[in-house]
Image 1: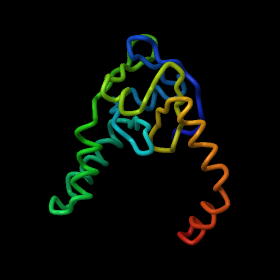
Image 2 (image 1 turned 90 degrees about the vertical axis):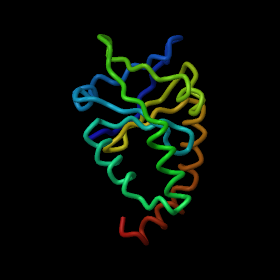
Image 3 (image 1 turned 30 degrees about the vertical axis):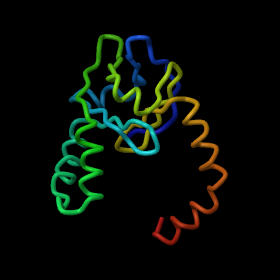
Image 4 (image 1 turned 180 degrees about the horizontal axis):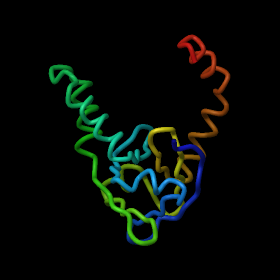
Length: 143
């Protein structure tokens, strides 16, 4: 289970250290892809395979299903860890997510999200301000 928020720096070669506590869960392989809200999603290979199967089974005749499948699958890249626990984030993913030097890695149970620090802080502030409305909506969904 991934939880918490961690600040790490992206180096000039596009490498980002993943928090040590998460590396064991990603040892079997990992996939980074375009996420939502201008962040990246980092999945353990097993969870990625399950998600990819679900995406592949979406109806091809629905435009939104095709668009989401393209976002997630065409934007994906398998990543490996170097000896210092870093992954290389491809240029197209850094550009998509506006990643600069300061980055946030946020744990979200079955995946990690990778954010540019400024975008994360802006997003987090907005969601914290709207937390009462969010909680009310989720309450109606049984959460």
